[in-house]
Length: 134
Image (cartoon, rainbow, N blue to C red):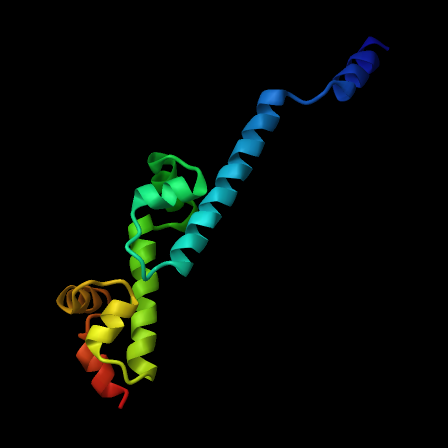
């Protein structure tokens, strides 16, 4: 009988607020990390910094970098670079834009920096991709 009463009391007791708060905090951080990913996806052509992204989504720089890597499996910079390179490849493959125009469109101030980053990412120069798609 005593065990039954203890069980009923345990079931009726409110859940631990610290446990609930921890769950809410993780959900909030996950939502903010998703906001950061969306910000990078939509603004990849801008000169984004970790400070801008973290302020924009309401996370500290450390929480952004560690959380982003944990959730998406890559750093914020790697994700930004991935977005830029995939869009650049698309532009070079389908449009008649010059390498300089593509570099500018994906957020590089100098086409030589873009060419180096593109070659490092794909193993081919932008000119090679552009020529092969003609």
